Image 1 (tube, one colour):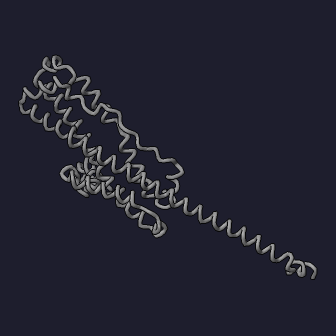
Image 2 (cartoon, helix red, strand yellow; image 1 turned 90 degrees about the horizontal axis):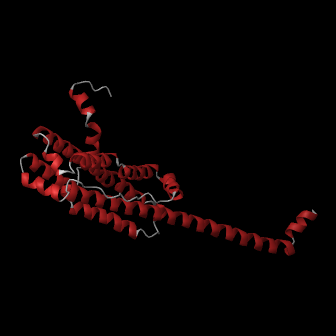
Image 3 (cartoon, one colour; image 1 turned 60 degrees about the horizontal axis):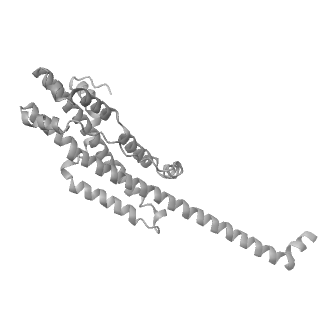
Length: 259
């Protein structure tokens, strides 16, 4: 009885409730602040991803349009007998392209990736895949080595037989075609996989009262780039076609599709 009397005594109860209420208020406010910070960090990560996609898309399209395709066309003209063009390309060292170092975009801290991964693993994996594609240097490095070995010296090239010259130029064309395919893969992955996932993510109810202006502007910029360079954009079925091309296509043609 004494315990009950003590607990119900005004001298104890009122200060206790005041202290408990204040503590609960502090805890609640700390929880709200943590949730708010958590959502702000998620939107920062999405903004970062959208920015990287915009930059990678723009860079891939520009390289494809202004470097790879012009060199494919030039190689075709040379193979058709344009001697003046090949002299010009040797004099200007035009065979040696794509020698600049690639810009690294993988600067998003891991803790931000964890936040996104907990919400949408598909989005995180898609973004990581784009970064992986952008870092692939095997074809580019092989291409540069091939040019250095075969197309750096005009004197060395002119001493070769017509058949050897043709083979060198055809191989050069093959490398350019592979590089074009790699850029198309990045472009397609951003436009048809990552961007829709980014758009879907920011529509979550948890972000209803948060500003997404910068993210939406970046996504709009991606659309503008797509529209501006529409002739450089692969079709929406490009990724699916890429999966089923190559050796799988040959196997299916021969009627031995086992999968």
